[in-house]
Amino acid sequence: MFLRGKSALVTGAGRGIGRAIAMAFAEAGCDLCICSRTKTELEATREAILALRTSTRVIAIPCDVADADQVRRVVAQAQAEFGKIDILVNNAGYAAFKPFWEMDFAAWQKTLDVNLNSMFHCIQAVLPDMMERRSGRIINVSSVTGLKPIENQSAYCAAKHAVNGLTKSLALELRDYQIAVHALCPGGVATRMTEEAMPDRDKADFMQPEDIAHAALFLATMSPQMTTDILPLRRFASTPLG
Ligand SMILES: NC(=O)c1ccc[n+]([C@@H]2O[C@H](COP(=O)([O-])OP(=O)(O)OC[C@H]3O[C@@H](n4cnc5c(N)ncnc54)[C@H](OP(=O)(O)O)[C@@H]3O)[C@@H](O)[C@H]2O)c1
Image (tube, rainbow, N blue to C red; front, side, top):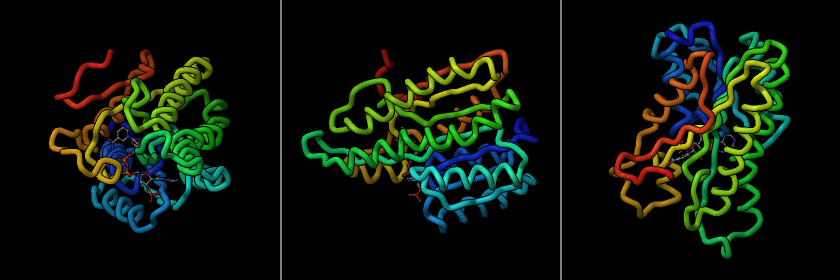
């Protein structure tokens, strides 16, 4: 129960990595505000958390993280319910892979809106209270695509590189406020995202959402004496990142 007394906002918690992170945090005793757009998935995550019987408080609020007003409302509701948000997990993401020359501007824009601009909205909304309390942790779910080029993933790659840049800049800007900022950079994880974006790829050696949740829990429970900015997590069978 390392996170007893803490509260977290996890975006994109209806399925995949976000759901696994929410479950892992709940098992550690953390109170949770979870959001995504699909109400049924969100409610299923809430029920799974309650079934853990860890006395975790959980509120599930449908929200499109690309919409600043909706994000502000979710943050206000979570702060009203728990008194504070200790940990923000910016996990919601979107990927559609195709050659750059076949991509229209709407697809480019959506990729940046959901993967990057959503982080602007969420971080801006939680920061004033974190800065006032001089305490907080922000975990941005990035990707190995933020560390290296991958064919046919230009928009996603641009967004995730930007997430890593944002993470490092914020780690610097916020260190005097004792606010830690990290980016988790997983390679292939077996989720609906990869099923839809690369249907023909064999996923037998992919990581599981719970593997990434384990790493998020490590970040969330890290000693205040240390930090890490960018944490790559690659498939065991893949090549070490340079
Ligand atoms: N799977 C991988 O291999 C992999 C690798 C590296 C990094 N990542 C990153 O990990 C994160 C989670 O991905 P995943 O693989 O778990 O994908 P997923 O299974 O498709 O889940 C994505 C979650 O984000 C939510 N979401 C999407 N758009 C949203 C929006 N506009 N507003 C609010 N919520 C939204 C989805 O719910 P709704 O659609 O209902 O809103 C869903 O709950 C993403 O940031 C992704 O880029 C994934």
